[in-house]
Image (cartoon, rainbow, N blue to C red; front, side, top):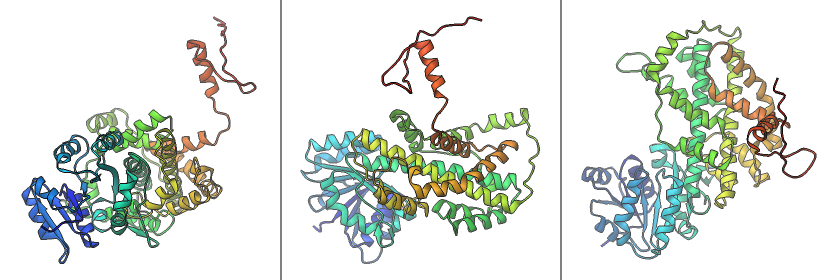
Length: 472
């Protein structure tokens, strides 16, 4: 029987496209799925000359693979992953490698690494970003966990990943569940940037009365400049998409209720657990939740009618200011996510290389942007940088944009346009760059009612005061 280099379990859109990518790069690969139709589609859709086979028998699938076996899972996160592992582990032998390429929760990945290690099996959690097109032609790949296993599959990963300046957008992300943790934070940043872009769209559309054609031109210009990114690029294209049913623009027919798959919420929960401030990512998660209150929002809009929006006098200047605000807000969204990676790397001993994280995000992934080149330079200069805002070159960028952010938020506030994301960016920036915050009062309050103690500016140690009530 012919032996295959790799195996893929799960032949949905992502699994099938990733399998084709692997095959197109010279590796033989077998696919498994219980759905026989998917197996037929797999073999019919493979590139001529590549070595691809499908089966709906798990035993036959495992028997087709060369040893040590290298199996990639592309199945829904949670119980489906555990079910596959339970079904397959008795068929595997010592030193076989299993890679979970789905969006699994990192604590589940840690558990699976430990469980399979007791059987002598290597398990890796691997983030994959880029959607179905990225999976097919070159995603950003974030592998973590078993280092020996990584070295075994590294040539394949480097072959199939996106390329930037000749470099593959994949690298070892660290120990245990580091790969899935990095992907989780990637998705949290993605939530934030999408929220910020939607706010910029609202400001330009409702605030400045720009048509879809004008919005297309603005986003086209932005994508040709410093805001260049995948998300700006696809937003540009969305403004031109026509609706076959109504004949108008499709965007106008899409209901304003945003969905989610949970990775943004995981990021917010992790930040709270680890004591890291990521308010813009939190706001993006909350905004999607608010959008689901559609019926209530309709009622509230009638109960609290807004005044007519006063359009800006200088539209060209306003567009420039919104663009600058969006640039800075995007930068600070990355900042918040990267600061969480710094803390998590310490707390969980993941040993996440921040320089490599931003390096592999430059191509293939959903949050790829020209900004990441600047971040890569910053981490090359100082790999231990705790917060990207502390880099001198980046500080100059920030200072050149912050006035536009303030003016944009001022316009939105005065006209009743919700900019929850932009406002949290500014609040984060102002707090992070303030030497003395008013939380000394909070500490006094906590000590007053709960004897929670406080620290002093002029002495070391922990203090408690018997506070006196004026009772007046």
